[in-house]
Length: 182
Ligand code: HEM
Image 1 (spheres, rainbow, N blue to C red):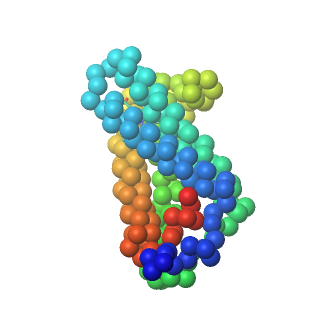
Image 2 (image 1 turned 180 degrees about the vertical axis):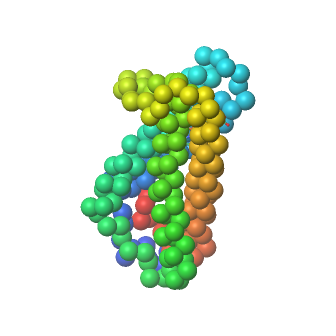
Image 3 (image 1 turned 45 degrees about the horizontal axis):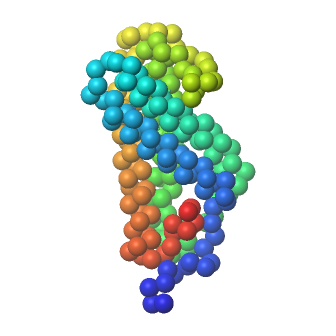
């Protein structure tokens, strides 16, 4: 009883749709990263091309889920942050969330642009053809690639902060934040 989280019963939660989209996006980012690391050192081969395709499908799932998520968010205000948070924590949470939202669009869009510039047309899940964002252009691809990587690693750094803050509130401050999104 002494250790019961402070606001377990009272804290409002995100809607079921918002929670589903949040975890779909998280899984997509982890999948895109895992496949990126798996093909990183491989020489060009059919296996590498499969892995790159899985990487692209995970990343495109993130992008499509983010379009739905943004549309949902604009119509359904998220639950207010708990009163226990200090002013700086609210500002930090808000800034981190805005940046993560931005990067969740920018990273996959740069990947899509990169794929087009490398001359690989996209077919989502091997089924749905997607338009090219550029014609094949090697120097454009070389220019985009570092920005795709920078966006990806910035996203992962911020996601690390986001997860760290959520775990700290849950297990150190015992405010049961996770319940809002789980
Ligand atoms: C959240 C989404 C994404 C993340 C976190 C991400 C991350 C990464 C990372 C870390 C790499 C470097 C892999 C290496 O070391 O070689 C990479 C490469 C790449 N990504 Fe993404 N990516 C995402 C989405 C996408 C999407 C949506 C596409 C295309 C539709 C894409 C296309 C590419 C391509 C073409 C490469 C280079 C592959 C090559 O070596 O030829 N990415 N991505």
